[in-house]
Image (spheres, rainbow, N blue to C red):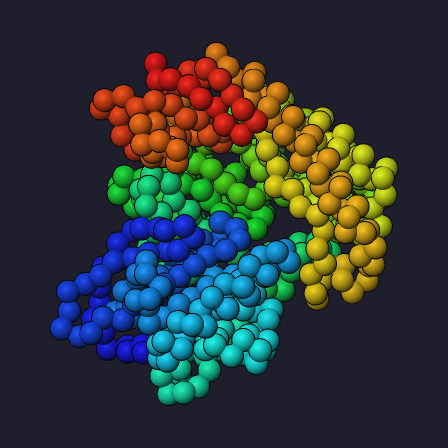
Length: 472
């Protein structure tokens, strides 16, 4: 069981699949191990690094072996039904471990924890701890409660919590790329989305702590950071003197100036908020990647209105035109939901035409699954048959694959600066990396090149998902 008196220890940086893994210490006190799995978005992986840091400060040790763990935590996502089903199935996998190790503590973190707190405690009998996204600091106290035979539950949503003073433990083993959370929560009330209810209201983190974190990462050898927020374009922070508001364009510039060798990415942008000022800042600095994830969700203005996205098709197209005009070499990706409430064949065709027109390099594509508690679930009818949803999704996937393939074919013969991330999954004789446009490039290793190096790679062939090339 958890014991708060364990000595402080330093964590290691490893990851196995979705499991986030840390380090051991030398101590006369018996070690207690924790194991974390993260599901869903990049924000969840970033949160898991915060949780690992908090547990580390309490003297706990991370492990990659489930059988060794005294504490198992699942960091969950409620964005889509499939994610919830995956987590519930994963919890059943832990039942046999609980039987073999009665003192094993199982906890659920994140969005599902906030939304399904009662069900986890009452129905999932093996769950001992339920912790919402704003309550991770309370983990030591909740673990102590479990030691005394109680359940530990805290899903309080905060208007201030940003974890700005906690240095995340970098659990991505490549040592090249890292996440920096710049804000939490969301003020956009999209009718299909649970995030405002599970992560609370929007609040921005101190720009000074963001810059300090970026500087620290660069000094430790990282060469790429991704600034994270549900809607990064609405970042707004008032300095302590109260005489200057720093917006997202200004924050981007501040991070870019940390070092020209530090690449900057960000996610996610909202079409209603992305400004020309942001676009000109991206164009101005070579180390701000020429890639924007700009979710459209639907190409139909009628459906966008039902989704409460607060922009229409014309507004979205205007923003895409501005991106290509100000940053001609920029790549754009998107999120797309098909089969939303009352979607007609005409609405669907407008989405298809938007994909072709916007020329997305890739998209995250899903059919609509109703999330309990959202405005759509309360006020709209999920009336598109499942088979029709699947059929439309297949058409969208096929079209996006074709568009991606055509765009990638245009890159053959071009040379890109690529940041080496590590070995290719298929061969340790090949490197993988990404160019500024976030496209994965595979290329043969050469002597004296290592992860974290920038290299010029000429593209020699391409599929819809990957470019292949050679170092020149």
